[in-house]
View (cartoon, helix red, strand yellow):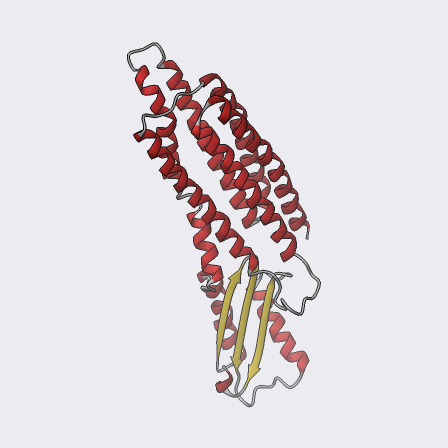
Length: 302
């Protein structure tokens, strides 16, 4: 629960800072005439909305109250939100890339570089400050939502840093033989950045889709099989079947053990002792793990 509370505090802070960055982006984008800065502001606004949705789901999945409609909890909502968030960032980058290409073909854009440089400096400090702060705290929290939010701050910081360099270079072109290139700097940098950064959320989206589709996580499956192979030999069981899945922060593990008819499991206490032994060997026990272990002498039940 402490990690959940820390996760929610971080997301609240991120939303507040993101709203501020978004307001700066829209204001300075209009003042400077920069499409890149406007994109940065819109990106921040969408990111704030995504962080708000992540905060809502973070609270939802940590509820411990029983719900007869969602008897397995709300874990399935977490990867759905992660996939939606990551997909939205990818689509936003793609749309900005198309706008940048259109602006290049139209002859570029004239900018007020003083406003643009002031914006770039302020937002770089905010973005990289949040990136390093969240990354440091998330080493202890281990939240996928905070991890995605950290990636968003890194993307925003990278965009703004490149804008700063581009604006500085374009400003130095004034009064030189290459001044005619200055209008192309803003859309060219935006096109390059969005083309590269569109791939950043792909890992998050892929991981979320694997969980939505209940694709077995190899590491967890291998751990369960290793523990059960040892338990079969140690207790003289016939065989077993196991099924594992990871949905959000929840792990679902089912183990069905076939035992010889003469196996001396003659009490609930002995069965529970074997279950406890297997559970401790698998590890990761907590409120986010659903573990089912049953015994049968009839292999048809496997």
